[in-house]
Length: 143
Image (cartoon, rainbow, N blue to C red; front, side):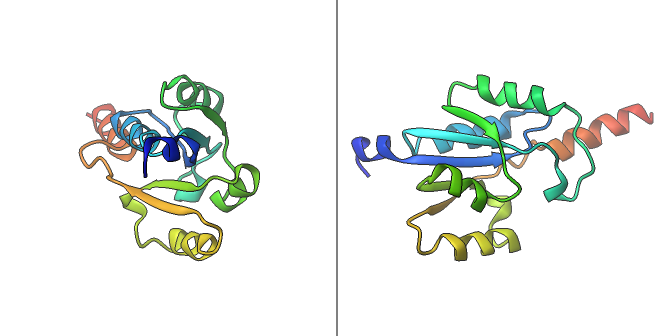
């Protein structure tokens, strides 16, 4: 894809972005490199991941994502990325490779198959995750 074509592409990425870290920045930066306009949806709760709550309040997580220079627009994410496609009609949906072959993204691949949306799996940052950060904090609190 030439640079002019890439600039016309709208990309979308959603996440909880709790305890914002280098893995979050990496996926946002890599997504932005593949589109002209990047919309990032921030989930109010992590319930879609089976987690009960976040550490950082939603409004603060949204503002952190909004402040990232690679993000053109930060929005409240719908429960499903398919719902956000109805809102934004993006051409690329970005997600980490940790969701490759997941039931959720198998559904998305079927949904987007006839809509001209490419699902792009970006490298997951192995050494850092919010789950790992929480575990380290919990371990230190119980010492």
